[in-house]
Amino acid sequence: MPVLFVPHGAGPCFFMDWNPADTWTRMATFLKGIADTLPATPRAIVLVSGHWLESAFSTTGHARPGLIYDYNGFPPHTYELTYPAPGEPQLAARIVQQLEEGGQPARVDPVRGYDHGMFIPLKLMFPKADIPVIQLSLRRDLDPAAHIQAGRALSALRDEGVLIVGSGMSFHNMRGYGDPRYTPVSAKFDAWLTEAVESKTPRREALLADWASAPHARDSHPPGGEEHLLPLLVAAGASAGSEGRKVYSEEVMKTTLSAFRFG
Image (tube, rainbow, N blue to C red):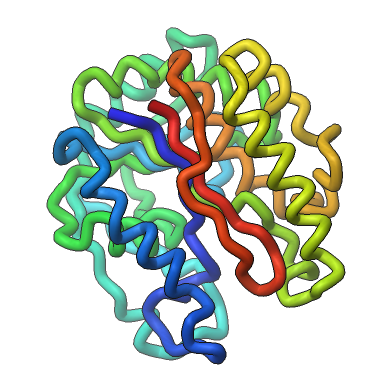
């Protein structure tokens, strides 16, 4: 399986009306088309969400996780969305073992549900909700090297038909959305990010580990926004040397947003 980093949009944006109406159309079309680009239907999905932070890496461990509607101020129908994908407790336990063997303390959370960083993009990518999903948290300290290392620990799952997905946003500064002053800012950071992803593995990891030194890095991901970039670092770590490339990019709300694929 390849490894993906995908944008999950703004809250339940794909399931409500917007003005202008086409704000999220191209992103939705991209997400809906991902399944057809894969070599086979995934046996399972491991998804890293920018909306779950813990002191140590954690996985969902319930056989039937519920949904966490962790967004505010949206229409009532968006709090009735469903995504009944099953969990897979045995895989969750194995992921924890692999992380620990890779030098990263980890735990299974037996009760936590899926947050919107998981169910919003997956409703478009795999609408039948019939593929087991394990959601993986970020580490609260947001240490770049630790997240790359965590990805490395999970890379072998790819050979077993498991799709690893980082779910976040390549630009995440709430003050920047809709502000034309951030159009060149986001474009410059996106150009750097693309070069980093498309570099060979040693340089790729070195660049991403020091992402905060990139041009306009903190304008694009200020404190409180960088958790949306860290899923990309997990994905890069899981690439196991696979070629990285940009597979989607567009200007949304005056800012450049992109998706990347490894392998």
